[in-house]
Image 1 (spheres, rainbow, N blue to C red):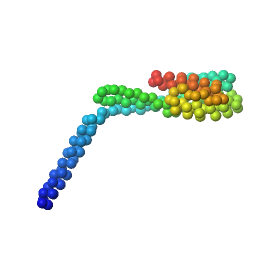
Image 2 (cartoon, rainbow, N blue to C red):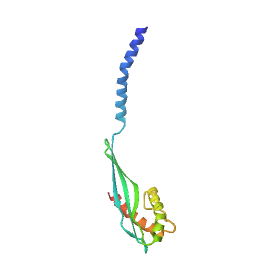
Image 3 (cartoon, rainbow, N blue to C red):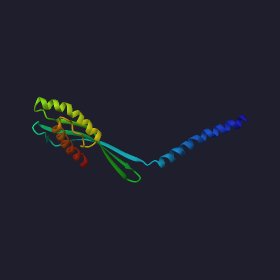
Image 4 (cartoon, helix red, strand yellow):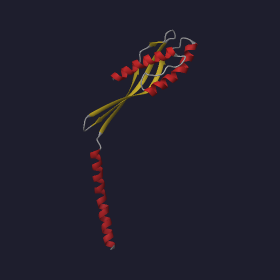
Length: 146
């Protein structure tokens, strides 16, 4: 009886790698192979006038992910806004500096959440909000063409 149990265990131990190899080959055959390419690029929006307060310009970083399914050659491209900055903002007076120090973080957060230029206006910073939207839309249009 001992020899029989040893024989069965030995055969099972030899068969397991074959079964595992078969299962792995089957899993590879059912999962389509993909090629994923991720690239980031910076875009700068047009300078927008904020009435009498000064100029506003927005710079964005967009991550473009291209996924290609090898078998079907199906290509999917997604773009995501990952960073928004305002390197040029109204600083004509102390008041405009104060307003933009309060408004810009809110506008930037809104743009990242919305993933578009459709951000809500900031109360008390209407001119800055409009200029921010205008410059952001310009940068997003450049990113869409990329």
